[in-house]
Length: 267
Image (spheres, helix red, strand yellow):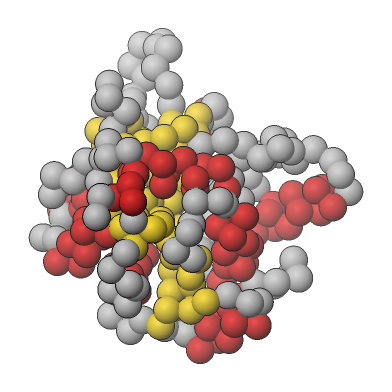
């Protein structure tokens, strides 16, 4: 069965042990846990004919998912990264699943249409993995090591990801500056290989799991992500300031206002 004919699923990997923002996944000042906002974005996409799942080793997360009407894939405590947790979870899925989109649970504002675009990219057979990026216009953010930058090859695939300023603007340049969005799409076969890939010095040095893919020769398409209808860009939640900024955008949406606001904290 070809990749195009096989089903696509979304998996939201969730762990409780956040180092920078304790209990991040279960923060619920918005009315529901943070990770369920991410899960809802996947539910709102149209390409996941195989379902949307939360992958976790936490009873608390599993119970919250089931209460919300979601499906859980239980994992061990062994996975070191979100993609490894997704790989362990995906092994439980039927053979007709051919595409897995890994949506990190702390990215609650990713656009459903961008999730659909990732599935379409993999089904077209252009790459075994794909991810998202948005323009980075803020100079302070460009030099912030907590903001992950990406540069693309001419064919649209990832050349490198870094916390450093890439491309470095030695001279004024029209080259685009791109910020990575923490979502990955994998063919099932590629995802199954992730846990056994050789370790990557680059990934360890930068603390970026996607460099392990690149260093091991796995090509990754980088698609353009979109802002929401209210103008808000997708941001990851890493700190309390990030979460407070997210709550502010939710309040603005509830009032029917614009959310063209810069992220409040480091991501």
